[in-house]
Image (cartoon, rainbow, N blue to C red; front, side, top):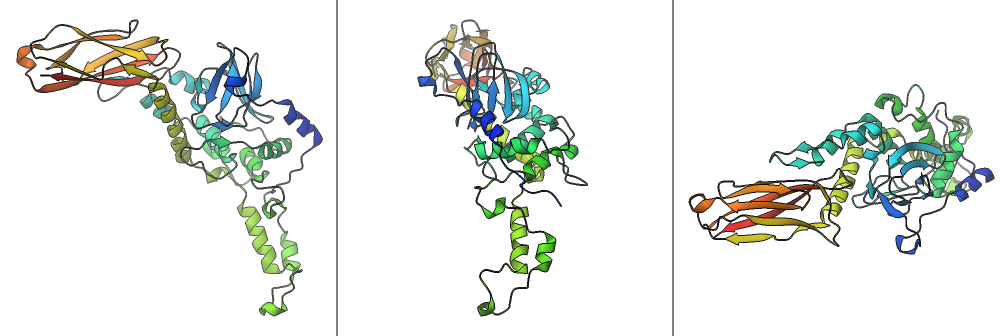
Length: 376
């Protein structure tokens, strides 16, 4: 039978937890560090370290760093990963060198434009990434992570995790195969041993107690059929059996979160970041209108809210090249030149769209914007 919730927090562990500071709000930091964010919907309670900074991610998943530094992440005393380049947005996909490198190779969508989203979905098939994500999701205080919510690593969970680490039969190896990492038979995998040692309820909750032994259940008197004959101070056989089932049923296992659950969670986080990045950019025109006879070269430019625009790549296509054609693209000026394709092809009363796909500097993510062009 698996060991359940054998946790007692030592003073030494309390001291270790107190050593790690929490992240201040950006407006009140009073220094020149940059603020990065882990995931979109927040990831709190994760310890981080750079060459110059140390702390714990706040409710928004924020951490501090200087450009060029790398990050080390831990859950309490459990190392997760090191050498992660610090930047404004980080997801779990960037925790591992193979997946981080794969993200730098974008793919083309069905329209022929470059996009990062197809690469992200391909990276989500990585077993190491899935092992890590499922494990961290199960450390969340509440079971399941609804849409729009992040992961919350509470101090109570981290304290129990730290106390249980020394009793594991082996290390937490995220690179193990999925069957090895999630094994429940013939013995629990180290990941499942750790989860079994954590009670995700208040300390005085019954489900955090040691379950009744089978001997205690067998030796207990059966519950009288007549309710009037029952002693409220006696735990009957049926009561102890039900208590045992409640306690053991509260123990989490890697089986409680599937690969599909992890992929759904990460996809939501990735989409949130992509949307946030895209909202910073706009085109200087949303709609343009020209007579069919005006074949002069026109321009549309990418702009960034607040200025400071710097693109690494830029491409564009016309959805109806018989009406509107792309003449040139220039990532340095962030401009696309285009023209109406003549009076014959550009008959009045028709329209086209210019689709611009561009990658800002310091990110692998591509942003898509469109310009509606009306031929009158």
